[in-house]
Length: 328
Image 1 (cartoon, rainbow, N blue to C red):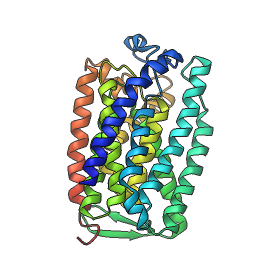
Image 2 (cartoon, rainbow, N blue to C red):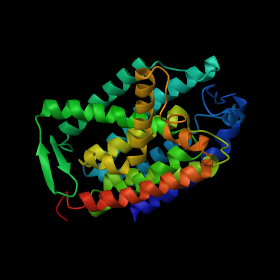
Image 3 (tube, helix red, strand yellow):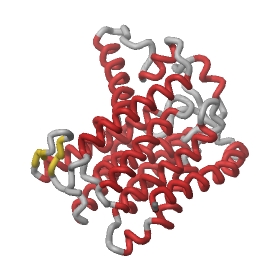
């Protein structure tokens, strides 16, 4: 019940914040710059307010504060840990967005700086989870009800790079109206249900709050978008998704719930690699995958709905695969 109340509260807060935030962003000329290499018709989106992720970030903070205090009072700080990590990722995105707006172009922090900042945040987050007993150096294998035990050093290196990869994969998915939010919504519901199933309420409060916040944001972000989440929002979502997976100690579940993130990232890697190897040839019309489908005649709404449907199906599959991770 608290998870549902957190979700409902976050939805109302997010939608209410958006009512005031969007005009404020317009007044501040915080508009999105569109890359020249993107689809031509995306130029019409130039100037749409960005950094709208502040809506669901504010909603998640307030909802966790209201509904998560009971868990924190009993010593379960996992919701706060995940929220804190997501906020650090969102702060990196905010700096990036601010630099883009200041320079009036779609380039902010360099890739190197983003990587180093995200890696440092990931290591600190993992160290915190380890110190508080929320993390073990074992990889639970979905469907096989078994774990692969690793040395802590090996596990932490693996986990840090998985987190950085996941954060950036979610960021890469944010390329169409409503896409990143719509795909991440069922992922949050998955972690909320899983947390409730295992009676680990704190992480579920955060997951439910974020789900509600995203839904409130989509009121303004679904096609045609009145606001974009920006890197502020997409990096926050990336941090939240992998943060929940590691806080619940089921990182391999990301392979299933993050199937769209993975497909988007792999399409980009394959395109760049093939282009360099063949000196100019391409496999996809344009990368990442959502642009390839756009140029094939798919509408933004169709892509969003299909990608979301795929994510829902794989979230259901993931639940079956990890539901017996803990005794119930």
